[in-house]
Amino acid sequence: MSGSPGTGGSNPRKFSEKIALHNQKQAEETRAFEQLMTDLTVSRVQFQKIQQLRLSQSRAQYYGGSLPNVNQIGNTSTEFQPLSVFFPGLVQ
Image (cartoon, rainbow, N blue to C red; front, side, top):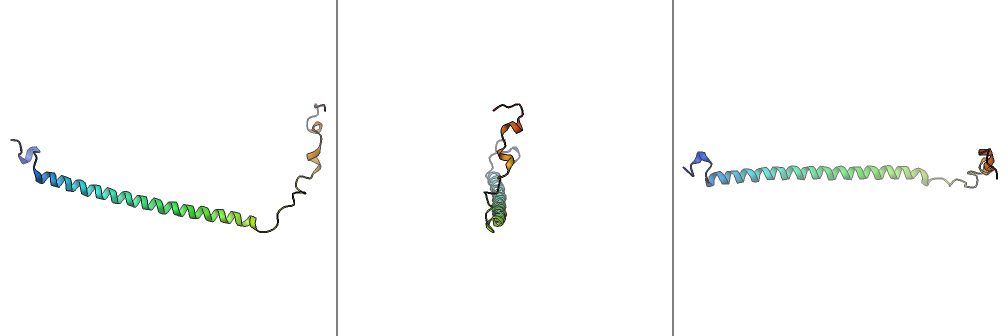
């Protein structure tokens, strides 16, 4: 009774077939994982290149020309008005 082919006994041929199927499935999963990781790496490199390109383009517009005259920025009379102009109830 034990060891008969239909009862799931320890038939060496069945074990070797199961091991072979397991190894084949594992190899397929490994290939799929490696392909996914390769695609991810390629995508990451492309994203970094796009980011660097955008950064270099945004910096390029600031490298040309002269700097603004900081003496003219904010030299308006509204900045130096007393606080009582903005807060009428305030006594100084």
